[in-house]
Length: 138
Figure 1 (cartoon, rainbow, N blue to C red):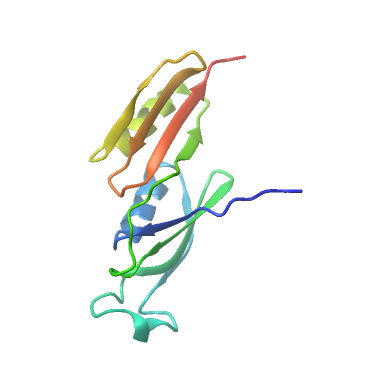
Figure 2 (tube, rainbow, N blue to C red):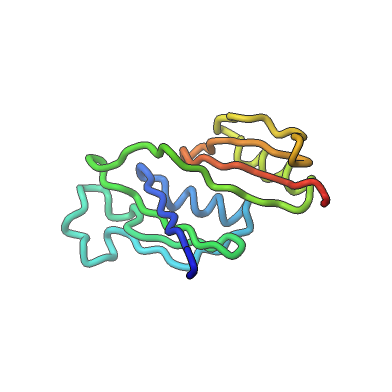
């Protein structure tokens, strides 16, 4: 059996900006973007929503994240999850944490722990919660 959780992030109109940020700072690759205006659902989008994202997929490492801009009356802030980045290099850990923390909210400062050379948690500027872990050499 293989378990592949589907990670789908909803945004309040910032999906493209978030995915472009993740592409740049996390080394991701945007594989697909479809706007509301270019979809068969264009007529269902509110005025001015045509350039917002109906469906997007970005690959970061070996994992795909899905994303979309939820319609304004449907959008709800995220709760109850976090995305863990496991990093092998402490300098890269520092860089990623700083990028995600910029204009975000640090919930656990990046520091050494009993299990990790560096561990920290942050909610980025787009409201997505991240944990970054750089394990100690075993």
